[in-house]
Amino acid sequence: MPRRIAALCGAAVAATAAVAVAIAGPAGAQTPTAQTLTLTEPANGQFSIVDNPPKSRRHGENTRFSVGDALVITNRVLDASRHRVGSVRAVCFITKAGGFARAEADCLGVFALSGGNLYVTIPLVFSEDSTQTGVVVGGTGAYQGLHGTWTSVNHRDGSSTDTLTLTP
Image (cartoon, rainbow, N blue to C red; front, side, top):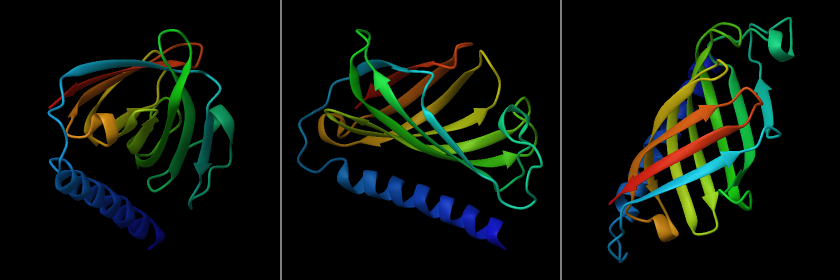
């Protein structure tokens, strides 16, 4: 039962965010222009595992995820000059069980940047040197009225490069 509740809560959050963005998007904003943001997530972000039953007997790199487990991710984001421009926060729900090399998750997140927030989703496959592609659902502030796609490239050192392509 707790897994079903967690899944329903995740779906409710996603639906609420999509509706809020759809309602708030056109309200009084100037016509936004297309843009691309390239951000770096350093290797030292915070990563917490919510290990719901059945519990993993191993931890760290040997953790075995089960459907319904969750990951909570927070990290700084840097621009090309390596200056901090905000943070990224996400929660990921495991949708395919397995160890780090095989598990998969669906993530909802926000890039909280100095000019506003960008709300994103992404399917996550746990593997080194992997590239993931997701959707920018919408934004606030300087990003109001924008949506698009984004790509996250994971590097061997644990950092990642995120490229967000935003269009009106």
